[in-house]
Image (cartoon, rainbow, N blue to C red):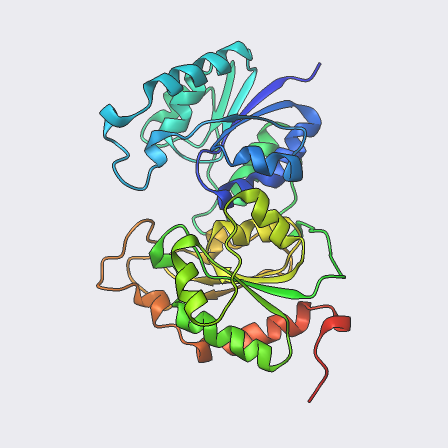
Length: 331
């Protein structure tokens, strides 16, 4: 009988994609329960089918009003506590240095609790893990946690993604969870036009609030309303171009090479996990990394990046990664 392991990853799509190599390795040795947002139920069949998911939206992960305790769903928190206790967990682990995760691990009743201590949260842990270097990719946290649990995870640059040589569509996804991570839509439109001029097959995808903008410009954009719909869109995708966003991470872990535009966040931490992934770093700013808001009138680190800044890298990325059989013929 496998020992029971609880894994906490309570944040976004991209965070779960980054945790995927750890979850896959852990499922080989442990009976794994993942505590994560409800969309993890849609990721589970594709990415880690052996993992059991308990859906939970932690109130402190809300974008606004996260500490208005009177608005928290205390009933759902009690139910999650009951479910975790019923599983009689042997080990619990979090890849974040987050005391809230560590307190949840304590409440779960796990006998062994592993994590990266912060603000004296070591008191909730039975084994404190040492953090990786400051600019290490976030996947390195999971690699360290895996080593402590007897798992061997590949280094970030050695993660091998499946290849899909029959696909030909370049998907340009213009959305992101936060507005300050969105490259101006006008620039994406210019990029799509330039790729089409070279006879590449381009499909626009966007978030719901961007749909009207694209339709007014004659596009027929895809607007996936769920993770399942996103997977269906990626099934026909050869290359992904977009912002620092969850869909880009899901594309990478699904085997699609990605080209990501970074602005307020550090690409060293969050570059998608694909051996062919490439990134464009936005303009320098003394306040990077920014999580939720910009201190200036506009996030110039990304908004002031022009098409001409991006095009040489983007064109080279497409030429290198689009299967030769589907590349346009030379003029």
